[in-house]
Image 1 (spheres, helix red, strand yellow):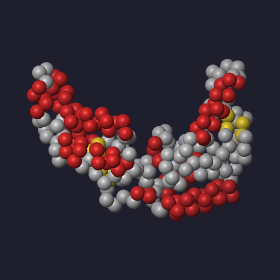
Image 2 (cartoon, rainbow, N blue to C red; image 1 turned 90 degrees about the horizontal axis):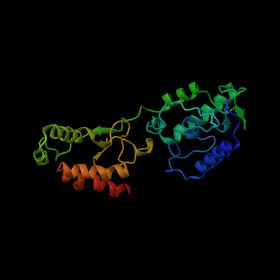
Image 3 (spheres, rainbow, N blue to C red; image 1 turned 90 degrees about the vertical axis):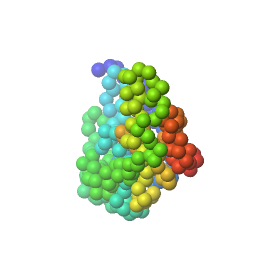
Image 4 (cartoon, rainbow, N blue to C red; image 1 turned 180 degrees about the vertical axis):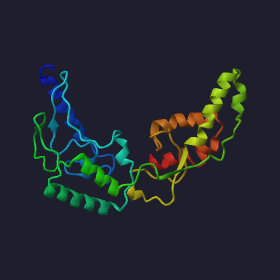
Amino acid sequence: MSAFNPFALFVMVLHVGVLHSYPPPCDHPIYCIGGNGSLLHTVQVRLPSIHMLTTFAHGVNYLQMARIFNDSKTFVDRPTKSPTDQILHNFQIFMQVVIKEGITKPCNLLIICFQDHEQNPTNEAISSFVEDNFFEEGDELEEVVPDDWAEDPAFLESIADPDYREFARDIHARWRELCRRVKPSVDPDRNSLIHVDKPFVVPGGRFREMYYWDSYWTILGLLQSEMHDTVKGSRTIRNSQEVW
């Protein structure tokens, strides 16, 4: 094992301090407001109320994080099963039970606990709370086929090489798979999604939202595919005006 590196410790502490100095991304008390004892702090990144240091490996200090999901995006993408006030109330009851019954992670010889650890629930307890109070992620949206999508846009004929033409055709076909709209039944208060009235194009995969910089490149691609209505009529530009 490498020797203790005080400079690495300094950088780590400075980094944590900078992270805590940023304002929250929004004012939602579940998905955006963190801090010691908050639901987000407990379930998500959880630099717990016990800032813990683990052993030093190769001169780098690591904070003990108790994430219950491999992807930090998973929790904040999950809609609540009840109104926000009810979820926060359920969380208070949950923490009272955790403290009363001692459903916590103990400190061990490899961890230095700087604060009391009795409010540090086990991963199993946190997972159970999330499953009881949150739906699975990704159910707020439905697929939409853009009205102005055409199977054979004119630009394909300008590509002489047949392999490149088929490659461009395959990319063009992706627009049918990437257009979404928010379901009318979705309650904006019960999820972290920024609601927009018009359909929009998503990057795909785990990224189910409209993104600022991605939208610029999306517009360029849609224009190349001659989907002008999707760009200006009802979707990308109008939604951008709502959000930004």
